[in-house]
Length: 164
Image 1 (tube, rainbow, N blue to C red):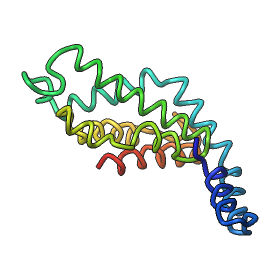
Image 2 (spheres, one colour):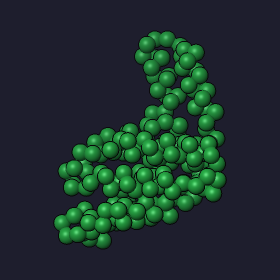
Image 3 (spheres, one colour):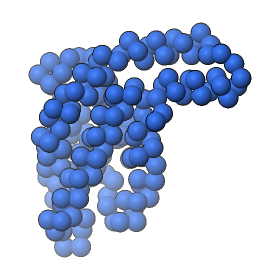
Image 4 (cartoon, rainbow, N blue to C red):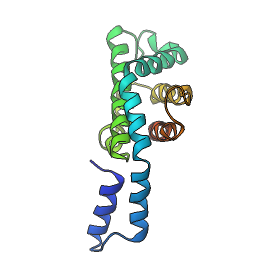
């Protein structure tokens, strides 16, 4: 699983060198933000069912046509799959917060997602709306500390930008 640390070590090894001072500064910054990332991961894990439900509900509220016949959410089974997909992405966001890099998202969530959604007639914009709602709904300090919120919203923005 790719993280800032494994990426820096891999790049240095591929170049046959020791990590540079700037490489080590990147690692240090990553480590300094670890407590905030882990707080965000813990808060998300402890409340993920509500987060997923609210995100999915917001998606279907914004794109109510998705429940029309022939659309991506025209049956309860398809609606459940949309919520499942949102849950999957939220788990990947959690994993990314834990490892301190976008590796889990890149490896298991982003690669090919737009193509899959297009092939299955699933509008990526609806997922983007769900994650944007989740990002915009965050309330500091009710949900988590300010720094944990920064880490969490950065991960959500990464997903939003990747699917846009």
